[in-house]
Image (tube, rainbow, N blue to C red; front, top):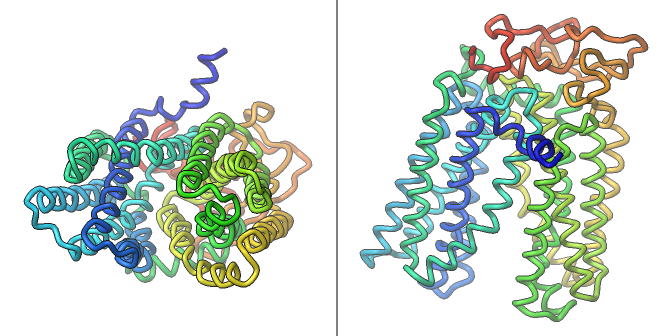
Length: 486
């Protein structure tokens, strides 16, 4: 029984190419968090200025606003594996240069700003390609589990990286953190290189300009209520819900009166909850009603924010933040899963880059939230944010029938070869697409399923004009990575 559960939770790792990508990603994510802690510490040590800390963070964010959408276009035009390796190489050089500068004693403040800018740019190129590659390598059968395992990697590294940085700084100094990240990136490149040659290759040859591809991607999202709905569901918790994180120092000092150490406990509760939620996501990745789980977990996220805001006692606040972390991790994993499942492979890079852009606008709400906190206090401001999240998700869930009623036929043991409850029409990239859920009273043969079958994987075109998805003749019937042609 336990072996079966483990196989279910980590099922996507049975895929060789995805396993290679995941192992390399985990190492680089631990190194990334290690470097970010060391870089922030070094910035404050050099300048004793909190303003400069903000400048370093802004330098990392600026490239994302410019590069993220074009990088999504590149992820749909080029070999995604090569984009990942190229961005890792630039990041490795960046980390190595910082290590040399620290060891030689010639590090200056502007070096950190420049390094942070490079880090933000390479991250923006890396993520759309990597996230699209996850789905492409895992294939339709293991796509949901692969996204959940990616969440496990991220949330575990978020705990291990800063802890490792603390040990390295205390024992060997700041340079050790940058050396570790450089070595982790080399490790990641080696594992990514081990992915089969066709693993990240595009499914189509692009014959139009990048601008046309970018416009086509935006038009595709706008014409698909399901895709645009998923982006909206992702944006609401990020733009409004994350206010609680901005106001965490206020809660720690003025509301709960637990000081800096208590704030560390509160932050750790979010991290622990997120890690637990990532494992839960992996365990339930085979559940067919992913849309319901997405809407429900996002609503719970909003409720947990309100519980935290209303708490006057540290243990209650810790419990609320733990629940918040679990709900947020499940919501993010399910959102990315549905985005990958409902997007044809040739559009995934652009859709993932649009999804990532929502994070770049997170600071836009911080100033209004800070002003409102000065007027009415942190708890009422945070409760208001929580209410906006819950109401918005309720409205979106009611309107987005395609998401709410989504049923994954590959995940359901009730419909192994046919679907009796619903069909899905995939947006056509050529004719003002519209995603619909069409009720059917009769069984639908497996060859007519609107969601890609296990045999066809994710390399199925979404441009059929009759409402069905036609298998791409370039791909065989083996359960291989979509777009690989294997």
